Length: 111
Image (tube, rainbow, N blue to C red; front, side):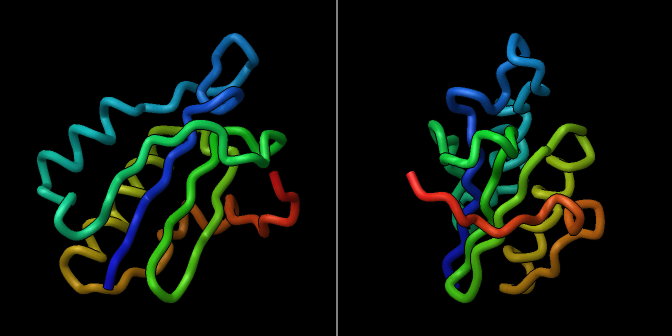
């Protein structure tokens, strides 16, 4: 199974000057390197993903599903994304960590 974590660091996401929390890009890249996740889960730091009203957006993708997350505002949210990736790497399947469940949304707007 292929898996991908896409983290927005675009026009709104991570922009402290717009009142949004910083996206910990370097910490995520370090975690991928530390845990050797790249062979199992691709990490993509993206430009704008589109749903700007949700700010600090990420997508967790597998062959079977695509989970949109928005309003990621705490380090524990990004730690949970790493945990999800570790589960994929170990088991080829992962449940969404509880801390991320309330941050899910359905993508309805299109760019």
